[in-house]
Image 1 (cartoon, rainbow, N blue to C red):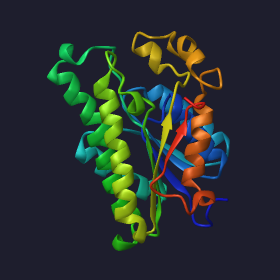
Image 2: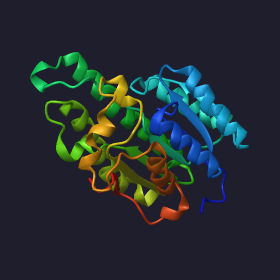
Image 3: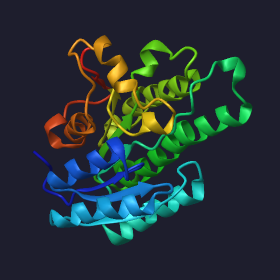
Length: 252
């Protein structure tokens, strides 16, 4: 059950894949949503349209999560147009083509950590400033989207991505303890093999089908299944859950 106050959520990377599914599920649960996106404005506007069709408010917000000024401006815009946020879903992230570490450039690694780590930290910082009772807020929830890559390290594929998601899990654990007394719950979901277009964008369109046999449930997951877990962690139904990392991976 969702709280009685106005429910406003910010979802970064909300125009496609898991992010778009999260936005949809939140809207279905009664949330107004700010849809953060980096470049695909058409997709973001389509997501906004689906939210509005459900009778909820939504805005599309273009930003680079690794740019501090843009992140601050995002939260200012949300407060002005939708109201004080009560949930942040740190979903924005990038994956680079498969590579061994000894073939990776410094630029690739820097960009990976700028988006996946610095971006999440900046958004979480602004969420704390907006939601913490220490700052006059009324509390809320932060959900970080990690990856099953943290459990295996993704050797010869993308150890940089796995490491960046590992940083998100540490952020989850530390920030949950830091802000638990200020009305903020911080959790993470750890998706496994999920059938989204991100695999095709990184030259592995067959990856979900190829790895389905390694999943105890025998199939890849869907963005909607991850979104359901995220929405539960945003809601009052998980009011005693904080510092948790929830696997959504079919037992893998």
